[in-house]
Length: 110
Length: 112
Image (cartoon, each protein chain N blue to C red):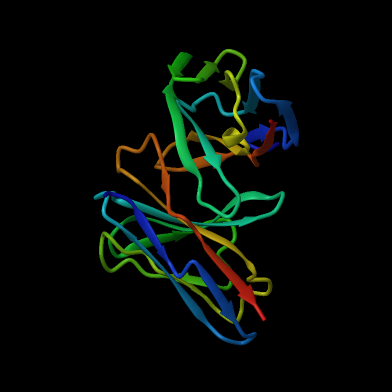
């Protein structure tokens, strides 16, 4: 079983839609959770990170962690064509080790 | 601005040649990493270093070598022993107390 599972998509939505991106994980010791946005042929850019369970909001983006279910989500409100990218979830394990999902490809159609 | 600088952005290599990808960071991070990204396979860890003059193999270290002589620098050499080197290579760094990891813009290596 992989440490982190992420649906690769692709996901295609109309402009203005609410997007929900999700990851599941198997290691209950994970405490820090991250979401990255990666545009084509670029390095991943850190969007949000959260500690333990709960919600964190930043503009149109909300990160949600449910440790009891080992499930994390990223919500994008009022999606824009500029949000079209691949989104990676990540978690920190012990000893500065990081575990990544394979990424979900998102296209927002104008 | 603080960040991670990778060079070159694009590199072409003939079969049988070694190439070195540069990675420099000015974030004062202790830990540095090299990942390989292939379509549909996500990020795979090649090597990582938690401290100067020390590094460990990741999941796919065969055919690669690294050095960590300075805190700011973590170059990756792709040797001729790497059977399928054409890929997108990402350098990253993290503070010792961890929590988040930051990436450079990546280097595209093509074997011709």
